[in-house]
Image (tube, helix red, strand yellow):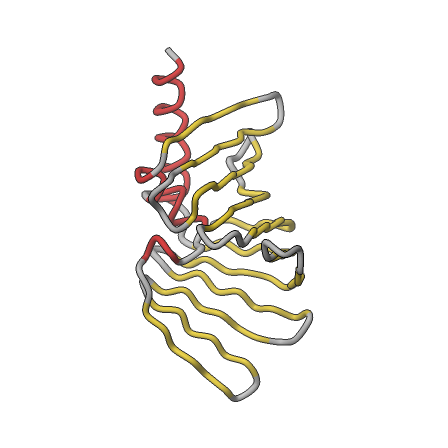
Length: 163
């Protein structure tokens, strides 16, 4: 019964995110090292189907980071860098919700307002990923993750527009 509920809920969430053509949200992103040092970024993000996620950072400095399939493009002032890395190492929450979750042991919890999805793995770059979605519209409002190097990532999303 619980397995059916998990797979049905994941299926419903996937259907929702596969239909989204455009999404915009403001965000606060905090990255913390295993030594306890942290930095907080603020700005807005846009997601364009099928696989482009852009972070427009306004604080602590203006920059733009574009995730496109397996490519990361970083633009700070007039300096641009381009990297190619494996898809499962790019921290794209929408990739995880649509297909990346298959590489993880999944657990789903619901209450009256939220759905929490926990992904755990000993063999993936991101060991633990926790998504919090609003129950009424599956809007992603928070993501936490830990990677194999001890880094911790946390995103909080607000002012979400989905089309």
